[in-house]
Image: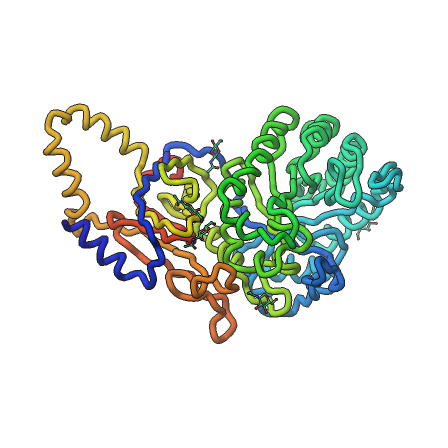
Length: 503
Ligand SMILES: *[C@@H]1O[C@H](CO)[C@@H](O)[C@H](O)[C@H]1NC(C)=O
Ligand SMILES: *[C@@H]1O[C@H](CO)[C@@H](O)[C@H](O)[C@H]1NC(C)=O
Ligand SMILES: *[C@@H]1O[C@H](CO)[C@@H](O)[C@H](O)[C@H]1NC(C)=O
Ligand SMILES: *[C@@H]1O[C@H](CO)[C@@H](O)[C@H](O)[C@H]1NC(C)=O
Ligand SMILES: CC(=O)N[C@H]1CO[C@H](CO)[C@@H](O)[C@@H]1O
C-alpha cells in the first residue's frame, strides 16, 4: 500500500504525462569488474577550418568559426570551454598560433593538433596521392611549439586519407612509412622534455584492410592512438534524420565498426588505443534543425555510451562550434542541447565502464559507469519510446547472487520472504535513508527539435550575466520508484551502489 501511494504521489507530481503506457523494467548492473576504461578526458570537441562560404544543401552553416577566423575574444567561448576543467579539443589542419595561445594556454584545454599529411605528395589518380611526405613543415612547427612552451597533448597525422579517402587518399604502406618519420621527429624534438606527446593516426574512416596494414608496417609503438571518424546518420539533408536517431536498430548498427576495429587492433597493434577523432552524426555540416536541437542528444549520448563500452578512450565531437552540429551556436556561441549533454557526461561519468543488462524493450538504452570522483555508479538511461514510460528497478548482481542463496534456504516459507520484500520497500529507518541524484533531460515544450534542453523541468539557459547555468539534480530516496518518461534521457547517480570495481 505504502509503495502504491508513493508511486501515485510521484506520478501526480510530474508536470505532464503524455504517456499511454507505463511499463516496469529491471536493470541489472555488475559492479564487480570494469568491461572497459576511458581516458580521464573522454569528452572532446573539434575546431575545424571550414571558411564561412563552405555551404551544403543551399545553406552556409559555418559562419566565422574556422580556426583561421574564429573570434577567440568572445567571452562565451572561453566560458564554455572552461566549464569542463579541462575540455579536450582537436584542432584540424591549420597552423594558427593564436588558436594555440588562446585556446591552449588561456582556457586550459587539452589540445590534439592535426598535421597536414599531404605536404610534398603528388596526385597520382582520381583521388589517390603518392610520393613521400615532406616533413619540413611539421618539423619546424613542432619545434616552434616547443620553443614557445605551448603544451600540445598529442599530434595527429592526416585527415580522412584512409581507405578510399574523402577527397584524397594515401596507400597504407606509404602512410606507415611517413608515420615512422614523424615518430622519429617527435622522439628527437622532445628529447629531455618531461612529456612526449603520443602520435595519433590516421583520423579517417575505418577500413579493416587499410588499418591493419598501417599497424603492421609502422610497427610496435609508432602509432599510440588509432583515430577513426563516424557519421552514422548519413547526409545532413536526409529528411529522415529524426526517425533514424530514434530507431534503436539504426543506432546499434555502428557497433559492428567498433567490434571490427577492436579486433583489428588486438591482432595488428595491441600497443595502440582507440579514439573517435571526429564524429558529427550527419555529414556535410550536420542536419539543419536536427543536429543543434534536443533530439540529437539521443544519438550523441548513445554514441558516448556505446563507444566507451567498446574501449574507446576519447570521443571528439564535430564540432565545438561551426556547422549545424556545433555544441555552441555558430553566431552567438550559446550552448546547444548537446553541449549540456557533454557537460553532464563529463561531470558525472567516471572512467570505468560496467556491464549492464535489462529486460526492457530495445527502446530503452542503458549504460552503466563508475561515477566520477566518488563511489558508486552512474547510469545513463535513454528512452527512445514515444509512448512508453518505464518504472525502473535497479539490481546489483552481487545482491542477486546473495539473494539466490538466501532464497534457497527460505523457499519453504514464501510468505515470510514476500513479507520481507514489502518491508524493505517502505520500512527503511531514517538512519539508512540514502539518496540518488537524478538528471532528467527533456525538450522545451515537448518539442523534440527545440534548441532548448530542459533539466528536471527547468530550461537550461545562460544566466542573466551570461554564465553557463548550474546543472542541479533532484534528490530522491534510493528506494522510491525511478521513472523515465517517454522521449527523455536521464543520468542517475547512485552513490551507495556497491561497485567494488569502481573503488
Ligand atoms: C628549433 O627551434 C630553435 C629555437 O627556436 C631553433 O634555434 C632551431 O633552429 C630550430 N630547429 C629546427 C630544426 O627548426
Ligand atoms: C529552423 O531553424 C531556423 C534557424 O536556422 C529557425 O528560424 C526555425 O524556426 C527552425 N525551424 C523549426 C521548425 O524549428
Ligand atoms: C557492450 O559490449 C559488449 C561486448 O563487449 C556487448 O556484448 C554489449 O552488448 C555492449 N553493450 C552495449 C550497451 O552496447
Ligand atoms: C510514435 O512513433 C511512431 C513511429 O515512430 C508514430 O507512428 C506514432 O504516431 C508516434 N506516436 C505518438 C503518440 O507520438
Ligand atoms: C515497447 C515500446 O516502447 N514500443 C514503442 C516505442 O516507441 C516506438 C516509437 O517511438 C514505438 O513504435 C514502439 O511501439
